[in-house]
Image (cartoon, rainbow, N blue to C red; front, side):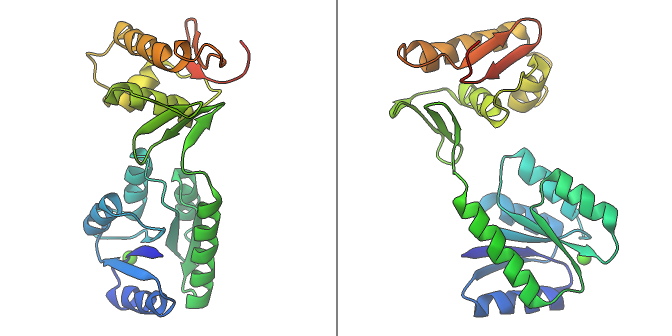
Length: 226
Ligand code: CA
């Protein structure tokens, strides 16, 4: 079990770290937001304990960045007592739990263990029907057969799967895949979707087609009929 603690009160951070080490966790420590974000993006952790008020980059901004990069590590935020808005915003951005300062170590430990347990029960891949995409090793399989996609095709498919059964407009796809590049237009997306269809649907004539064009609105992935 490996956790990251991002907390600028060094004494508190070290005492939490010591507690987790005693419980046989491996602990990385960061005392500012920049270092914390760097560690969170480069290493794999089972859980991140994230203070909100941090030098350089705030806890909420770190959380935003992680979730925007599809890093779904469980995060428990440390909030000041009574900072209800921070707590709500944190949960909305994608924190999994929060604990108000001051807290007892035993309570923090119990919460972290619960989060890690919950995360371990969740599938590590995105799926619709018999199509599975693994965001960690960039593999896609359908009906147990591997499918080779370009990086752009992979990102589009990933976005569709993150919002399966939902119609996604071209502008949302451009925002996710090309970071809002204004040179990308409908024709470019249509060409990539055509390639994805060929590799994912047409190559599997015995399975249901998954990628749907919703005229005038966008695209979606779904294994429903129609
Ligand atoms: Ca702080």
